[in-house]
Amino acid sequence: MHAQQPTEGWSNQAGWKYEVRENPDGEKDLWLVPEDPSGARKLTSTGGWGNLRVHISPDDRTILVEDGGASLGIDLRVFKAGKAPLEFVEDETVKIADTVEAWAIAKAGGAAGDILGHRYVKAHGWSADGSKVLISIAGSEGELHIPGWFAIYDLASGELSFDLAVLNR
Image 1 (tube, rainbow, N blue to C red):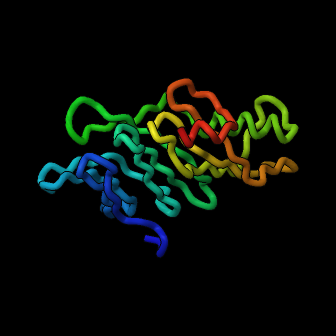
Image 2: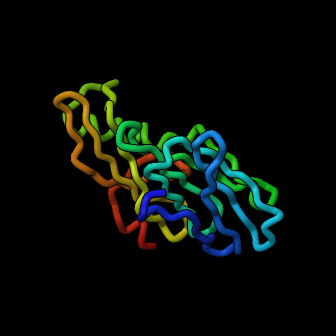
Protein backbone atom coordinates (compact mmCIF):
# COMPACT_ATOMS: atom_id res chain seq x y z
CA MET A 1 0.00 0.00 0.00
CA HIS A 2 1.12 3.52 -0.64
CA ALA A 3 1.63 5.65 2.43
CA GLN A 4 -1.38 7.92 1.86
CA GLN A 5 -3.65 5.18 0.58
CA PRO A 6 -6.38 4.19 3.04
CA THR A 7 -6.71 0.46 3.63
CA GLU A 8 -10.08 0.76 5.33
CA GLY A 9 -12.88 3.21 5.90
CA TRP A 10 -16.36 3.33 7.41
CA SER A 11 -19.77 3.70 5.83
CA ASN A 12 -21.64 6.87 6.69
CA GLN A 13 -24.76 5.37 8.29
CA ALA A 14 -24.91 1.60 7.98
CA GLY A 15 -22.22 0.44 10.42
CA TRP A 16 -20.01 -1.44 7.94
CA LYS A 17 -16.55 -0.71 6.69
CA TYR A 18 -14.45 -1.53 3.65
CA GLU A 19 -11.08 -3.22 3.83
CA VAL A 20 -8.40 -3.58 1.18
CA ARG A 21 -6.81 -7.04 1.29
CA GLU A 22 -4.01 -8.53 -0.76
CA ASN A 23 -4.84 -11.63 -2.79
CA PRO A 24 -2.61 -14.43 -4.12
CA ASP A 25 -2.59 -12.95 -7.65
CA GLY A 26 -0.74 -9.82 -6.52
CA GLU A 27 -3.88 -7.74 -6.85
CA LYS A 28 -6.01 -6.16 -4.15
CA ASP A 29 -9.50 -7.21 -3.11
CA LEU A 30 -12.00 -4.76 -1.69
CA TRP A 31 -14.17 -6.27 1.04
CA LEU A 32 -17.25 -4.93 2.82
CA VAL A 33 -17.23 -5.94 6.47
CA PRO A 34 -20.19 -5.62 8.88
CA GLU A 35 -19.86 -5.42 12.66
CA ASP A 36 -19.80 -9.24 12.68
CA PRO A 37 -16.80 -9.94 10.40
CA SER A 38 -18.13 -13.41 9.53
CA GLY A 39 -20.62 -11.65 7.21
CA ALA A 40 -17.91 -9.97 5.09
CA ARG A 41 -18.51 -9.84 1.32
CA LYS A 42 -15.98 -9.26 -1.43
CA LEU A 43 -16.92 -6.25 -3.55
CA THR A 44 -14.29 -6.41 -6.28
CA SER A 45 -10.64 -6.91 -7.17
CA THR A 46 -8.27 -4.44 -8.73
CA GLY A 47 -4.90 -4.75 -10.35
CA GLY A 48 -4.73 -0.96 -10.51
CA TRP A 49 -4.41 -0.42 -6.79
CA GLY A 50 -1.66 2.18 -7.00
CA ASN A 51 -4.23 4.95 -6.76
CA LEU A 52 -7.07 3.10 -5.06
CA ARG A 53 -9.64 5.27 -3.32
CA VAL A 54 -13.13 4.31 -2.16
CA HIS A 55 -15.91 6.90 -2.09
CA ILE A 56 -19.12 5.96 -0.27
CA SER A 57 -22.23 8.06 -0.90
CA PRO A 58 -23.80 9.82 2.10
CA ASP A 59 -26.73 7.36 2.06
CA ASP A 60 -24.40 4.31 1.72
CA ARG A 61 -26.27 3.21 -1.45
CA THR A 62 -23.48 3.88 -3.97
CA ILE A 63 -19.76 3.13 -3.88
CA LEU A 64 -17.29 4.66 -6.31
CA VAL A 65 -14.03 2.77 -6.69
CA GLU A 66 -11.25 4.96 -8.06
CA ASP A 67 -8.38 2.83 -9.26
CA GLY A 68 -5.55 2.68 -11.74
CA GLY A 69 -2.03 3.99 -11.93
CA ALA A 70 0.39 6.24 -13.75
CA SER A 71 0.50 4.07 -16.87
CA LEU A 72 -3.04 2.70 -16.60
CA GLY A 73 -4.77 6.00 -16.01
CA ILE A 74 -7.32 6.40 -13.25
CA ASP A 75 -10.96 5.45 -13.69
CA LEU A 76 -14.14 5.36 -11.61
CA ARG A 77 -16.28 2.26 -11.24
CA VAL A 78 -19.80 2.50 -9.82
CA PHE A 79 -21.33 -0.07 -7.47
CA LYS A 80 -24.99 0.23 -6.47
CA ALA A 81 -26.66 -1.34 -3.46
CA GLY A 82 -28.65 -4.51 -4.07
CA LYS A 83 -31.40 -6.06 -1.98
CA ALA A 84 -29.30 -8.10 0.45
CA PRO A 85 -27.18 -6.52 3.19
CA LEU A 86 -23.75 -5.55 1.88
CA GLU A 87 -24.77 -6.56 -1.64
CA PHE A 88 -23.38 -4.09 -4.17
CA VAL A 89 -23.36 -4.70 -7.91
CA GLU A 90 -21.10 -2.96 -10.40
CA ASP A 91 -23.17 -0.88 -12.81
CA GLU A 92 -21.15 -1.10 -16.00
CA THR A 93 -23.65 1.10 -17.85
CA VAL A 94 -22.48 4.14 -15.88
CA LYS A 95 -19.55 5.56 -17.85
CA ILE A 96 -18.39 8.53 -15.80
CA ALA A 97 -14.88 8.61 -17.31
CA ASP A 98 -16.10 8.28 -20.91
CA THR A 99 -18.65 11.06 -20.43
CA VAL A 100 -16.24 13.54 -18.86
CA GLU A 101 -13.51 12.62 -21.35
CA ALA A 102 -15.76 13.42 -24.35
CA TRP A 103 -16.67 16.78 -22.78
CA ALA A 104 -13.03 17.64 -21.98
CA ILE A 105 -11.78 16.74 -25.46
CA ALA A 106 -14.47 18.89 -27.08
CA LYS A 107 -13.69 21.77 -24.69
CA ALA A 108 -9.98 21.47 -25.55
CA GLY A 109 -10.72 21.60 -29.28
CA GLY A 110 -10.21 17.92 -30.05
CA ALA A 111 -12.23 16.04 -32.65
CA ALA A 112 -15.27 13.91 -31.85
CA GLY A 113 -14.10 10.37 -31.26
CA ASP A 114 -10.64 11.38 -30.01
CA ILE A 115 -9.54 9.60 -26.85
CA LEU A 116 -6.89 10.35 -24.25
CA GLY A 117 -4.07 7.82 -24.10
CA HIS A 118 -3.57 8.79 -20.50
CA ARG A 119 -6.81 9.63 -18.68
CA TYR A 120 -7.06 10.39 -14.99
CA VAL A 121 -10.61 10.74 -13.62
CA LYS A 122 -11.05 11.23 -9.88
CA ALA A 123 -13.92 11.77 -7.46
CA HIS A 124 -13.77 14.60 -4.93
CA GLY A 125 -17.10 14.77 -3.13
CA TRP A 126 -20.80 13.96 -3.07
CA SER A 127 -24.01 15.95 -3.07
CA ALA A 128 -25.87 15.58 0.24
CA ASP A 129 -28.35 13.11 -1.31
CA GLY A 130 -25.66 11.03 -3.04
CA SER A 131 -27.09 11.60 -6.52
CA LYS A 132 -24.20 13.70 -7.84
CA VAL A 133 -20.44 13.58 -7.53
CA LEU A 134 -17.75 16.20 -8.08
CA ILE A 135 -15.17 14.78 -10.49
CA SER A 136 -12.01 15.93 -12.20
CA ILE A 137 -10.24 14.90 -15.37
CA ALA A 138 -6.67 15.36 -16.51
CA GLY A 139 -4.89 13.68 -19.36
CA SER A 140 -3.13 13.92 -22.69
CA GLU A 141 -2.79 12.47 -26.14
CA GLY A 142 -0.37 13.95 -28.63
CA GLU A 143 -0.87 17.72 -28.69
CA LEU A 144 -4.11 17.49 -26.70
CA HIS A 145 -3.66 18.28 -22.99
CA ILE A 146 -6.39 18.41 -20.33
CA PRO A 147 -4.85 20.21 -17.35
CA GLY A 148 -7.29 19.16 -14.62
CA TRP A 149 -10.88 20.33 -15.11
CA PHE A 150 -13.83 19.79 -12.77
CA ALA A 151 -17.44 18.88 -13.44
CA ILE A 152 -20.40 17.44 -11.58
CA TYR A 153 -21.68 14.05 -12.73
CA ASP A 154 -25.34 13.18 -12.16
CA LEU A 155 -25.56 9.44 -11.45
CA ALA A 156 -29.26 9.26 -12.40
CA SER A 157 -29.13 11.10 -15.73
CA GLY A 158 -25.51 10.52 -16.73
CA GLU A 159 -25.15 14.21 -17.51
CA LEU A 160 -22.51 16.73 -16.53
CA SER A 161 -23.20 20.08 -14.92
CA PHE A 162 -21.05 22.89 -13.61
CA ASP A 163 -23.25 24.50 -10.96
CA LEU A 164 -21.53 23.82 -7.64
CA ALA A 165 -24.67 24.86 -5.80
CA VAL A 166 -26.20 21.44 -6.61
CA LEU A 167 -23.59 19.85 -4.35
CA ASN A 168 -24.50 22.13 -1.47
CA ARG A 169 -28.25 21.57 -1.28
